Image (cartoon, rainbow, N blue to C red; front, side, top):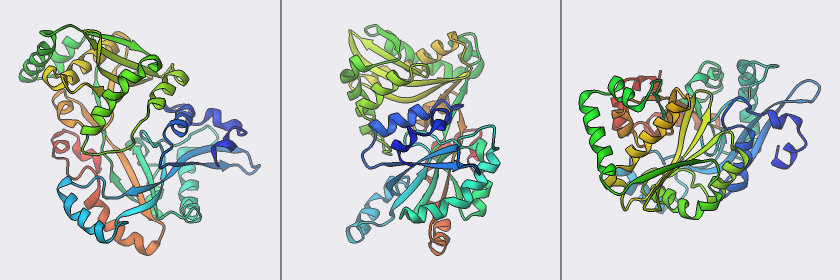
Length: 374
């Protein structure tokens, strides 16, 4: 299905209704993050022809070596001088272009039944769409049992760069530090926080719509994006604006000013007893000297505790500070296969060598690192 058809589908308004990124989020992505993405939707119907589940997907030209260690970059570049499309393939990705994927679950059908139907038909549809690679993109580990049927259909499961989670079921940030952090970690964190506090005051505010100030905040996001070693989707100003306008029940923007100048912001989403840090923007002319990342995390956790949230969850990357703050990994998986049975054989052998977690040494220091594969 294309988006125009969804408007005539009563089920669309209930798609992914139990997730923080529900159908509204996917509409925002299609409206604001369209460059290079061809958004489509699988519809699963009952015997009467009524749509019972909708599974978003998108088609994109994917670099399968994007998660490889940067030291291999020169070699890959030389190969691509001769073979420009080397390990770049037209790919069908089931899930979300900016975030983890979820199954559209409803009472009429169990996740196992939905997965079985989906797994049996996906390759056929992918071939009709002319793609080479199929990826179930970043599905949380909670789906591993019901997605085992994809392994029986030739898919290989490999870990994606995991999210993280931190228990914040405390009465205050100080109690969290005393009970969760070692004496050495507390000392280092307090020292970093004092660095910012000894400069001009930094003031925090929380809003759900940044449209009036997006021109000042968006360059902070671009600074962080430009410094990242791994580039995924590049978000737009319209994306940030539409989130607050369409999903005010889920969106919280934390904003920091110093001397009336914007120096940092974090886009968060709230769902149940959890607050999710999704994207961050920093003014790097002062961010490193003032340890703005730690300052922002302290303020968000303090706010979250005061508002009754029990978990602070974060997207992937920047694992070193999260390790020292006692986050644990929150695994997400990729399920991958080639539409050709013959070409899928060598792909199965190569995937463990090019999966994105392989070359991140910090991940191995987390106490639950083995959960990425188990």
